[in-house]
Image (cartoon, rainbow, N blue to C red; front, side, top):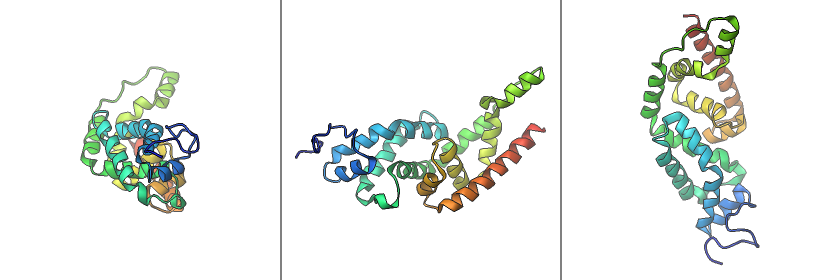
Amino acid sequence: MGVGAPLNGEADTGTSLSDEALIAVSKTAPARFGGLFERYADEIYRYIARRLGEEAAPDLVAEVFLVAFRGRMGFDPARGLVRPWLYGIAVHVISRHRRTEMRRNRALARMPEPPAAESFEERAAERMDARTLRPGLARALTKLSAAERDLLLLVAWADLSYDEAAQALSIPAGTARSRLHRLRMKLRRHLDLREGM
C-alpha cells in the first residue's frame, strides 16, 4: 500500500476516519496527516489571526501543523483529543510571538471609544455591541498574564470546552474552571471601571 492510498476502501482524504485514526494512519502513511490540516487549519487560522493579526496567521498556522506532524508519533489518544492538542501547539507557537500580541492589544486599546449614543435604547444596544468593547477589552487583555490570556481565549475565541482548554494547556480541568471563574470576575471589574470613567 502506497503513501496516502485508501485504507479499507476509504477515500484518500480520510474524511470518514476519526482524528485519532488519521494520526495513527499517518504514522505509516504521512500524507494522510493532510486530513487533519483540512479539518482544522481554518479554525486554527482564525484563532491565531484574532490573537496576532491576519498578517502573522498563515506562517504560524503552517508552524502549528509542522510541529503537530513532527510530534504525531508521540500523540497518545488516551491523554486527550486531537483538536485541543492542536490548540495547545498553537498556544506554544503564539507564546513565541507574545510581543506581537501585546503590540496588537495595545494598539486596539488606543482606539478611540465610540461616541456616546443619544437615547437609552441606543445606549443599551451600543453596550451590547462587541465592537464598542474592543478597546476596553484589549486594555483588559493586556492586564492579564500570558497563561490567563491563553486560557480565556481558548474558551472564548477557540470555543474549546473547559476540559479541552485544560488539555491544551496541560492543566487539571478543575484548575481551568476555577481560573476562568476568577478571570471573568477580573475582566468584568476592569470593564466596569472603564465604563464608569
